[in-house]
Length: 294
Image (cartoon, rainbow, N blue to C red):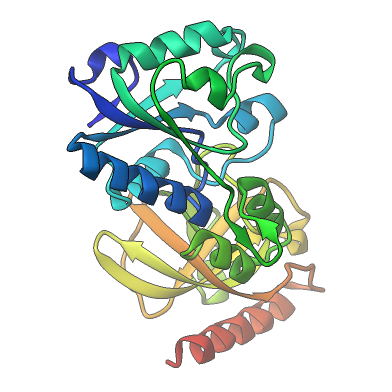
């Protein structure tokens, strides 16, 4: 069950894990595994108390790794029973720590679980010691991989560099994006490689470049070549995500397309003319076919 207000949740005690959970990466998964164990021991439902948008996205203006719908899907996969997704805005950011603690009391939290870097309330004035006044609190150490903690900021930086393989190592799965296919200028079709112009959520982090990817249309999956960039050969413009589904025929307009980025093939760059671009796209397609062993 998903709720935006405490009053919308079922009554009764709960084990509550609190955090932004942007990306639901391996560090988050480690915390949630401990929360699931506690919930099983207490024979209580596991509730995740999270924020939309994630706090750093709102406070610092950075991109988000997961939209709310993506995050909720990932939380379900982690065995979460309930989720409270609180709108994070200027009013919420201005609340003092006492108001946040009152929310946890209203949630009937029997046990609390947070990461060791968790803070709350105006000016980040609250911490685990304050949470103990509501319920016994398990503070989970940050997960270390490759000599550094697994954090959303680290993954965001990797994706901004286009390093989807390193990001996959920290996420525990390939990085993905989803969106509705909108009508574009049909340039790909004119070049002989029809592409789907995918409209992703504003603020969603997208790795720049050309990638081998996997695409889902409903429950059917297809290997794909995905370009994320500004089309410099045509003079540049807004960032676009365009996907060519290998072996697919049919119309995709109005359908949701789900993608995961598997391997970077090259950087986006400008070409002398459309014929040179066509030649390079054919090479990209061949590189993707080799990757998928087609």
